[in-house]
Image (spheres, protein in one colour):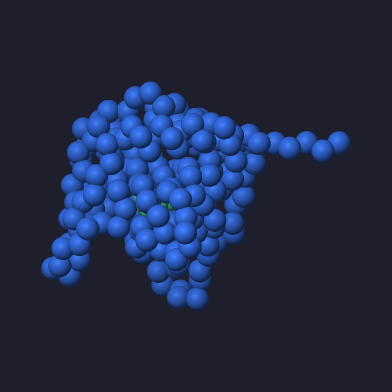
Length: 203
Ligand SMILES: O=C(O)CCC(=O)C(=O)O
Ligand SMILES: [Fe+2]
C-alpha cells in the first residue's frame, strides 16, 4: 500500500554537525495549511524595510521584516531596534504548534519577507545578548524554497546547507549560535516570495 503523508509533522531529520544541534521537520505544516498561512501573512503583516548601517554606510535591508512579542522587550540587531506588536490570530496558532513540538514557550517572533531572489540575509549568528546563552531558535518557512547555509566560525572547512521547504520547521539549539554562522544567499533564479518566521525567547 502506498501512503502519502502530506502532514507528517513529526517526521524529522537531525543532521550530525559538530558543535551544533539542528532538527529539521520538512512537513511540519500540511501543504494546505502552509498555503493559507503564506497568503495570510503576506497580506496582513505590516512589513517594513529598515536601513542598516555597515561600516559607517547606510543601506536598505535586502528584505522586509516585522516583529511580534508577548512581552514589550525590544529586539536590537545591526543598529535596528524593533518594537513588538502583539501576537494574535493565525500567528498565535503557528506559535502554539511550534511550542508544542519544541516544549518551550517563545516570547518573540521576527518575520522576514524575501520578495524575490535578490532579497537575502547575510552571514550572522543569532547571538544577541538578550537571547541569552545557547538560545533556541525555531524557524518556520512558507512560500518559495530557499537554501539555508551554515558555516563553522572557527573551522573554515565545515559547511552545511538545507533547502528550507514550504511548511517546514528548523530548530537550532545547543551551541549552534555560538559556533556557527548562517545565511540565506541571493539567487539569480526567477522565484516567488518566501516568508520566514523565527521564534525566539527574549527576556
Ligand atoms: O530566513 C531564514 O530562514 C533565516 C532568517 C534568519 O536567520 C534570521 O531572521 O535571523
Ligand atoms: Fe538568523
